[in-house]
Length: 192
Image 1 (spheres, rainbow, N blue to C red):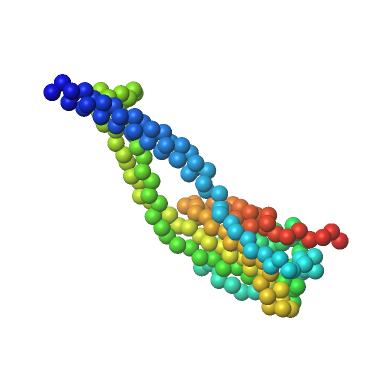
Image 2: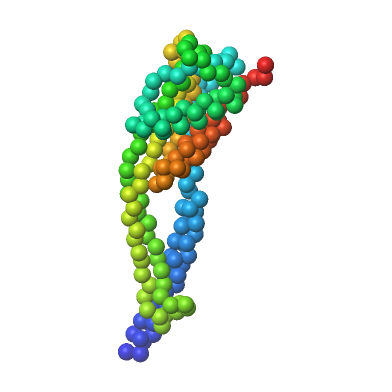
């Protein structure tokens, strides 16, 4: 009997250590997840293309969002990035045709937190617990294509994915962040 009591205490102590270690991992994981709101971007470039021959661009219709304000925000952000790289917008017949596609979808974000009871934890205190939070979030994917107008050939594609903010006032900042990350990987033109 006495032996079983010792094993019981040892088992509770080991469980406590696992719960405290688990809580530490959740805290570290939560801190990392807090940093994980950077947009994910990917760029594909046609390596055989000399981008120094492109000087102008014009827009081609893509898949715009239902909101005209969001459409204008995306176009303004892309235009800023192209202007920063020395490309000038023309109404028709640019060297490049620029188009974008936007899609949004809802998904469930499920986060589980471990917690312990009391200011100190040892095998005398009661068991810890968990709390699971389920939240519906919207994620957006923005695809920007640059097409050689004369060849009708895709020369550059930027893809950005990010969680959409709940507050519409933050959409402009998020769009700017995504397009900036995409175009950071744009091939540099030769000076002149």
